[in-house]
Length: 429
Ligand code: GDP
Ligand code: IMO
Ligand code: MG
Image (cartoon, rainbow, N blue to C red; front, side):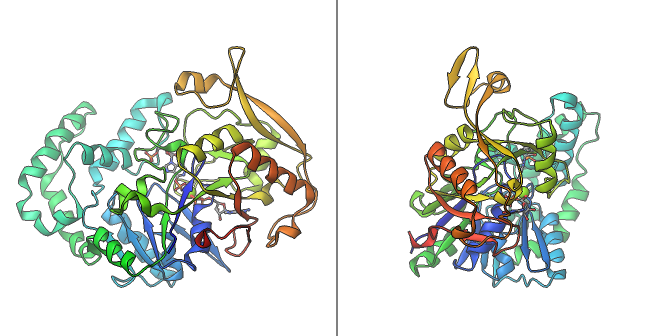
């Protein structure tokens, strides 16, 4: 049975949640494999809008939803999100939801450190979501993390708490903050432990068994390839690998599990937080993209920066993440523009570049080379058949395919689940 991996191919917020929700009806299990509750995935089903940060988007259709070991898990955020969704009528039980027992926990101390660092960095800040993602991944790699499985052994964790506190107390002292209140942390963890433990299991084993039954697995990436800690616009990135290859290490299945890699690509470009953005617009066109696209962050409510489609970046993302086909989203936002532009290359110091250079200094200085198109006055909003798209919109899509060297598998024309045109079914490949 073929699997599908959904990854963002820009700087996040490409519409992954919408596409995962739509594909979930065709899948048997949905798996998150990296990131944490820095993600904000929006699903619109009829009159109801669901905003998910930590839970896999399959949960809304009732599809079995798993959080793999590659995710950093804030237990309190998990509880709050489950309660919020239950309030919207979504059933979440150990029968349809599980978390890996090896997930590192995001603790209050991580969130505090994230926020303190950003405040101290002033203009040089990364613009993080303030959820403690970076510090939690640092502790995982530094072997100081408290993990989901540790919740069953809180009375025996002295050495691990020693390691954690030795590291954090020194950092906190540098910010003029008191040391970690160990008694309070232990009490808080003891209180939340049973809630998390009811969902905890070896997710790798569950997936192995499911795979033997020939189920279709849908992997749900968070963030986007340009926020990948290795391949993104470092240091203005998140702290995990967001590329499709992380499916293997972040869920416990081998590298062959990813299947069809569906890159989610917005028909223009947005970014939230700091960092280079070659096609960013500060004019009326940029403002119009933001307004028509409702470009405000799902997690932090921050205004997203907007710009023209950057084919250089998406071609790079597709190559790095092994994208099989793309889902082009938010095409409707471009309706009514007199002209639309696509960035086809960069200019730097008199030279032409066909890729984004590695250095942040050069990334900040590249100038986009544009191809200009006539726009379309017809509406594509809610179009559900290829034949319903205006000729100019089709021309725009075909040019994007050519430039990014990757075919379109689906086109999204509205936030609602079924505002989707299927060109090529990723599960049928
Ligand atoms: P994600 O993080 O990749 O899941 O994306 P977000 O949910 O953060 O942001 C995408 C936003 O665009 C959400 O508000 C979606 O409801 C909305 N959206 C998704 N696809 C479309 C589309 O094709 N057209 C329009 N107009 N909105 C869309
Ligand atoms: P989804 O899954 C857009 C950005 C932050 C910041 C950088 C680091 O909804 O696409 P972090 O809190 O991860 O340490 O912040 O990454 N960022 C996102 N931007 N969409 C996301 O998720 C993001 N998750 C993190 O704005 O620039
Ligand atoms: Mg988002």
